[in-house]
Structure formats: C-alpha cells, structure tokens
Amino acid sequence: MATEYGHEDGFGQGCGRPTGFRDGYGRDAGLRDGYGRDAGLRDGYGRDAGLRDGYGRGHRLPAGLRAPFEGRSWREFGYVLLGLPVGILLFTYAVTMVSLGMGLLVTFVGIPVLALALAGCRGLGALERTRARALLGLEVAAPEPLRTRGDGFMAWVGALLKSGASWRTLLYAVVQFPWSVFSFCVALPLWTCGWALLTYPLWFWVFPMYVGQGGLQLYGDEHHRVYLDNPFEIGLTALVGLLFTMATPWIVRALTQMDRLMVHGLLGPTRLSARVVELESDRGVVVDTAAADLRRIERDLHDGAQARLVNLAMDLGLAKEKLAEDPRAAARMVDEAHGEVKTALQELRDLARGIHPAVLTDRGLDAALSSVATRCAVPVQVDVDLTERPAPAIEGIAYFTVSELLQNVSKHARATWATVDVWRVEDRLMVQVMDNGVGGADAARGSGLGGLAGRVDAVDGILLVDSPAGGPTRVTAELPWRGERTLR
Image (cartoon, rainbow, N blue to C red; front, side, top):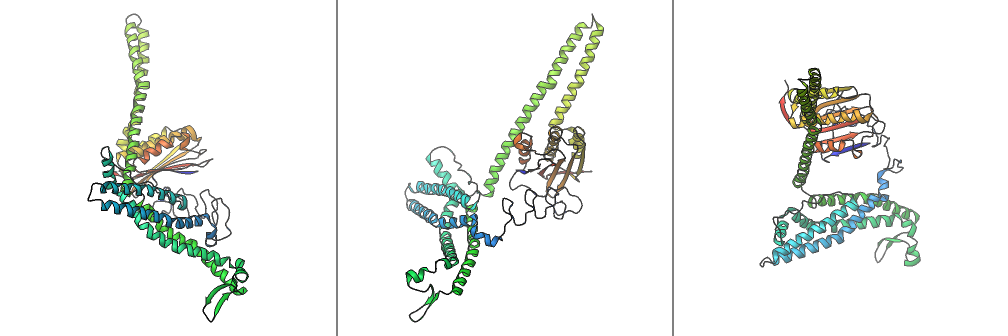
C-alpha cells in the first residue's frame, strides 16, 4: 500500500535515499522507482504492467484499435455533442443579459442586471465543471468565493462586479460557443461517416432493394454515375470506414483538450487564489497544532511534575514535624523526597525535550536524532548527510517527525531494526524512516500519521507512506529547505 499525504503539487519526487549512482534528484539511477525498487514495466501493485488494463488483464488489441470501443472515447464524444446546445444556452444567456445590463447603465437598474448576469454565469459555470467531471474526468475546484464587505444586496452586487472569477466565467460563456460549433461540426461527421462506411457491407443491400440503385453513389452527373456495388469496392469502403473510425477518437480527444484548458483556466481558481486558500487552511492547521501542544504541555505539567512537587511538599512537611521526635524517620522521608525531586526533574527534562530539545538547538539534527534513536526499542542506524542546517522551524519539524515515527516503530511495528536517513535534494530536506516490521501503517487507523501529515503539510511539505502488509515500512517526509547557517 502506497499512500501520499500533503499537497497535490508538493515535492512528490526524489524520495529515494541517494546511494551508488545518483540522478539529478539524489536518487539511485537505473530502472528504479522512488523507493529504490526495480521499476521496469510494473504497475502500482508490483506486477508486470506490459499491455494490461486497470484490472491486470492483458490487452490483445493495441491502444489505436481499442479506442473506438473504450468508454472514455464515447464519453468524450458525448461531451462534444452536448457542447453545442450547452454553448448556445451559455452564449444566449451571457450576451442577452450583458447587453441588457449595458443598455440600462444609464439608469440605476443596469448595474444590478450586470451582477445578475455574472451570478447566472457562475451558476452555469458550476454545471460546466460538473459536466467536465462526469464526461472528461476533469477535476476542477470551484473558483474563489465572493468576498462581500458588509451585508445587503448592494454589497453582493459589488462583490460580483469585483470578482475576477465571475468575469472569467462570462468570458467562458462567450468563447465556448464558437469552439463548440467547430468541435460539433468536426466530430459528428467523422464519427457517423466512419461507422457508416465501416458497416457498409452490412447494409449496402438497402440501395438495390429500396432505392433503386446498385449501391452507395460515389460520383454522378447527367451522363455517368459510379456506385460502390462490387465486393472489392464494398471491402475498400469498409477499410476507409475503419481508418475513419480508428482516427476519430483521437481527433475528438484532441478537440476536448481545448475544452479542458478552457474549463481549467476560466472556470477554476487562479493559482494565486488557490494558494491563498491553501495558506489559510495551513494557518488553521498550525494554530490547531499549537493549541494541541499547549494542552499537552498543560496536561503533562498537571499530571506529572506538578503532582510530584505537591507530594514532595507534603513529604517535607511531615519530615519537618518528625525531625525532633524521630530523626531517623525524618531522614528516611527526606531521602524519599530527594528521589521524588530527581524524578520530577527528569519529567521536566522530558517535557522540555518535547517542546524543543536543547541538543537540537546546540548541535543540530545529527546529534538530536542520535539521541532519539537511543530511546527506541530496536536498534536504529542514523545517517544525516547535511552540510548546512535548515531553519529552526524546519529542523524542529524534522526532529519531531522522526521522533514520532520511531515511537510508532517501538509500539506497533514489531520490527528488529530501523534506519533514519536525512539528506538534502536541491531545495528540499528529505527525512526517511524505514523499519522491517509487519507494515500496514494507515493514518485512518490512528497510527499518528494523520497528525504528522498535517504538521508537514503546514509548511508546504509532503508525507509519503509506503507500508505494504508484511512490511517493510518506509515513511518519507519532504520539507522545503530554508537554510539557516553553514555547519562548521
């Protein structure tokens, strides 16, 4: 099972540990995938791919011959056919409403009419995204929502008129119509002629029986006419039809590429707005993570060190009372209090290490991760290959990611060894933890991977999990590199 958590446009490449011959991303060269396994012609489940379909069955026909019979080709053809009536509807609505609004601009009514035109275009744009998703398999997110300043109808009108997404949808309604006419006029004749000529041997008998001519008329004037009526001509017609039928799906697919570009570019969010939404989401994750950390620290202090210090104060009070009448008992109670002080100090050190360990600040990731490895239940080999230190925030996330992953190894993996590798690939900090345990790690089962993915995602990173049943498990965190200072 291979799972990816984080941004879709993250750094999901270059996660193999650099050994031997390396490519430009620091990975092993040759026919290997991102996890160092032989790639070759294999599918996502490690089986030989070759000419196989989505169910692992071998295809007997090449792609060019399969295209006319594939569901994708028919869905794309249906998209082109529906494009014409949809284009007429969009164009008619947009031109009518905008013309009406522009004509009424001399009065106050024109501005609300323009706003209604834009609102209607946004609604029709949502239907177009749904049509593209259903027939083209194109996933396009909704554009940025309206940002109204204040309440009321006029605030809504102002937000619509200032919304770039609304005007892009209006532009789509205008330009989609001529393209839909062109696509319809190309696709429908090619598709119908191709299948009609391909099946001509099955229906040519209609002409002599019902039309009164030898076959399909190829040429004719008042003196001479040519019919396709002998076996050779019938077979040649079918061959031409086969060529048309084989080529038409690819032509239709090329036509739908323009539709994909228009839907994605005019009906979806801009890169900037998508980035703003993403950063707002990440900011929420950071705030929630910080609040959860504060609650954890408060709970640890209340249940741990604070409780021990309260008991220590009570024990010292009792020892003070017994000091005069029973010095030996008082001394024994003072010794017990001394042990409590040591335990409380150790708990406070552990708590401080959970906030930000001093060894990480003073000596960097190599020493800090080696310290974490010594507390793991299995032997851990640590390899940190960095010539510079990343920014403290990135360094801290890398540290806590490895710390939690090694805790998972100790608690759940039933492994006998683990490795920790840290290296830099261009503008990315790569952190990889591998163990030979039972595998099957899944964020949905509460293994802590979901929280790790959120923490990594909050800084524009990505978490890659490869944990097939039976192991081994390999978890790779790719973090953006933000340099701090050169190592000495």
